[in-house]
Length: 252
Image (tube, rainbow, N blue to C red):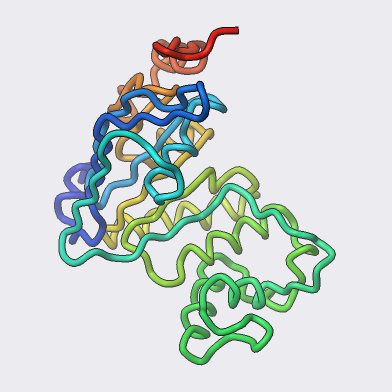
């Protein structure tokens, strides 16, 4: 069965996303220029492009964190569901006596973290930590974890509550080999559950294996296609070597 056939056969729980003529200006600099593409409901859709190309800014427009021009539409198959977000990295004072459980409590429940895990959320948090292979390290300080282990904890917090749309900002950036296998299993689980995944990633080999669709973004969309057609040497050279000149951008 092809990925497209599997997608048709899978019950869809996540939304389709339509980025329609999205532009974003910071001061006199245009960060996004008339970005247009669609994310199919229940698909794994990768965003690739150079640093500074606007990928994270586009994600922030989706999450309602940055003002923009144009229209952004989410079409849910039923009632609007939950959106989960996994950031690229976690910035914190590594000297803090913050355990994995404390972090999960702070991120996943309304009850103050210093009171511990609530009975309501504890089973879901335990299951999430087990899925990323971090349940046995739940009492460790976050500052004592390796970069790959911290990234797995970030993946775990993105699982609580269960989301129908997941937004991932370079989740593989600090993962070790066991962590990569965990992430690939999670992607397979999300695809089987019909979750929509929008995924920023620099590992083009992983994108080629795991994504259903790839959008190349360097302030504007340079391609939007299936991985086998998108990740060609010619298209990647254009994506990573070009610096689009935007009308109205400030000159030096």
